[in-house]
Amino acid sequence: MDEKRIRVLVAKPGLDGHDRGAKVVARALRDAGMEVIYTGLRQTPEMIVEAALQEDVDVVGLSILSGAHMALVPRILELLSNQGLENVRVFLGGIIPEEDVPLLKQMGVVEVFGPGANTQTIAQVIRHVGHSPEAS
Amino acid sequence: MTDAGRTAEAILAGDRRTLARVITWIENQEPASRPVLSALYAHTGRAHLVGVTGSPGSGKSTLVNEFAKLIRLRGGTVGIVAVDPTSPFSGGAVLGDRIRMRDLAGDAGVFIRSMASRGSLGGLARTTGEVIKVLDAAGFGTVIVETVGAGQSEVEIARTAHTTVVVQAPGMGDDIQVIKAGILEVADVLVVNKADRPGADSAVKALQMMQRLGRDGRPAMSLHRRWYDSQPRAMEWAQALLPDLNSVDEWEPPVLQTVAISGEGVEEVLDAIRSHWDYLQRSGELKFREAARIERELDLLLREKLMAKLLNRTRGGEFESMLGRLLEREIDPYTAAELLVHRGADCG
Ligand SMILES: Nc1nc2c(ncn2[C@@H]2O[C@H](COP(=O)(O)OP(=O)(O)OP(=O)(O)O)[C@@H](O)[C@H]2O)c(=O)[nH]1
Ligand SMILES: [Mg+2]
Image 1 (cartoon, chains in turn cyan, blue):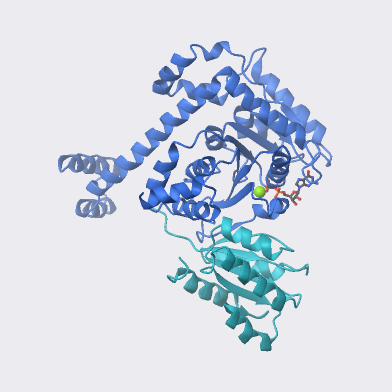
Image 2 (image 1 turned 60 degrees about the horizontal axis):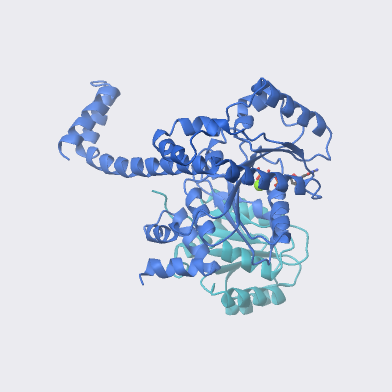
């Protein structure tokens, strides 16, 4: 009998063209036993939320390097909750200034990982919340 | 109404979130999925099921994206299941087929679901067949299934889909590869994609030559016709409807070229896919295919249930002690298995 797998959408909203970091994280999560849906560059918030819904993911990981996080993240969180997906846990990675982190967490982001974050740590944190009862 | 009944109603009414949620239940083989599948079963059997298979990187996802766009232009709706391999080392997977399907975003007439193979061989996950049923019941007129890019042993998809499209790319192997892979036996439509690359014409010619070789003047017996013969009970039933399938001319799979990244040739492939569907209905072969599929499905379900029951009975203390005796070479595994089966049957 198959056990439940944590499903994670790794997405790159915004216009910057670097997805190396997102790919490294996708691979690390796969190696930690998760099913990672990878959707590629330049995703709009609408595309991300639609994919999260169709793929019924437990977790969305966003990689943002462009500096547009304060516009993109609230929009994505709003669309998620419009779709009844408020239980989906949202993580953020990329280049995020320290002073924005508390505000992002207040909005509902579970954790923000900087460019130097260890992929194993990321996998551990995601596994922890992915299995918690809120993220059913 | 029961919970399962309400869930099924929501799916029939087009609730995409419930649809997505139930697919997860099915993938995890959660008991809650069973009554929902039962409730939906009567609503299945309407969609045209199209399988897309072929070697890794040959352009399957890019083609599926093009098919879906065209089907939408023609007014149809599309459910897509894209299977990618599960890592045997970690049990995880990176599911990347959606990257090529971004043109379909924001379209309520399309639903895309990525599936990990979860250890199952043969290009599909064990539960892909059930996921297809749910999309069929949800009302998608065409359900497209992209297999793991294996390029070999594609029998599973050929038995699951009505129409199987095999995608090749130039320079990815020679005639012997084609023979070994058994592509000709399963393909209803053959596509040489990446026709913008050198070698496409010769790939088409090679495929056509292989087709003629296998045929020596008359239609080769396809995988399907052979398969029907191996499902005798279903065949009796189907023959009551259509006495002699062998008197019907067999479908001849066309070999077509495409450039999926530009859409070139895609229209012709979709037309061929639809012609094959018409052929199946017109010739009556669809009835045979359905009968063979259903007999196999029931057979597999029965085996699964019986197996679980019997294993439960035969495992336990006796099984453990047998392991010790095997390690000491006091008994051989063949005798050990026979003994366990006998004792399991006795205490039933
Ligand atoms: N030159 C050329 N490249 C193509 C064509 N079709 C697809 N590609 C490229 O081939 C690569 C693989 O395409 P996919 O559609 O992902 O292939 P796939 O068969 O789905 O791959 P897997 O699912 O990994 O087995 C991508 O980089 C595509 O852009 C084509 O007609 N011509
Ligand atoms: Mg693909």
